[in-house]
Image: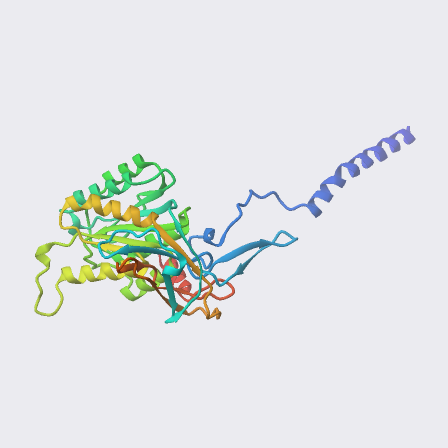
Length: 368
């Protein structure tokens, strides 16, 4: 009886030991299960970061080593989206590499490649819904709807109204009906924080847009009164984001009269919108009548698609985080003077893909 009891005890102990062995091994050698992680490019980092790679002036190649870790190798290739038009504003589509000249910090560069692309677009429809736009909002909404009708199948857009602050009415989508519904629900109210809205929506387009080309189409009267940022900070942010900005400014004619102390409010608004658009490689329009809006929408859609991609390796190979100015010019064709529009420059990022403006972007995100 004693032997049988001892046998049962030993058998039970052996079974328990065998059952515990796989559990101990699993705890020692296997990490807890994790959800699948998508492969991230530098553009797909968190919203709180300003990305350094794959912008104009900071191309990157993602590579994988044997242990599965990824690293980013930054190259010096600078790629510029360039719009070329004649003096009447008609696009010029038959240019070759030898027709272009690029200057970086006033030094002529050797162009590596020129191609013409008609690619899908990620763009934001940003609408001023402040109290000063009350009499214009119907016209603005009609203009936005016309722009939505110009969308192609692979395009995507978001809607962001702003007054004293910007908000996201509709995230990126290719559904025209959803976009039209979001536009129809806008109502005027409050002050105008134009500069804040431009920075917030440009950052959002850069971070969340799925297409290589990104743009904002902004409708506003340009009467800036409530922004927390200054114009200088906005211009630095425009240098950092690879987003073309198109502005449709509805300026009241009665504000055009010059006051005793300098520029009229209308003149100041017009000049501000022009500077913002030009520095981003976009364009500003100032329609005086709703009948002009269809042609403006068509021109913007054409501008965004019919562009040249001009690439070069800069002679200045230093990656010191400094801003490099760029000027693009085009030879006359058949006696016609041609005008090239492109971004005004880029940051020569360091080995980590960082530029000085990133610190400012992080500060802005922390304050939101």
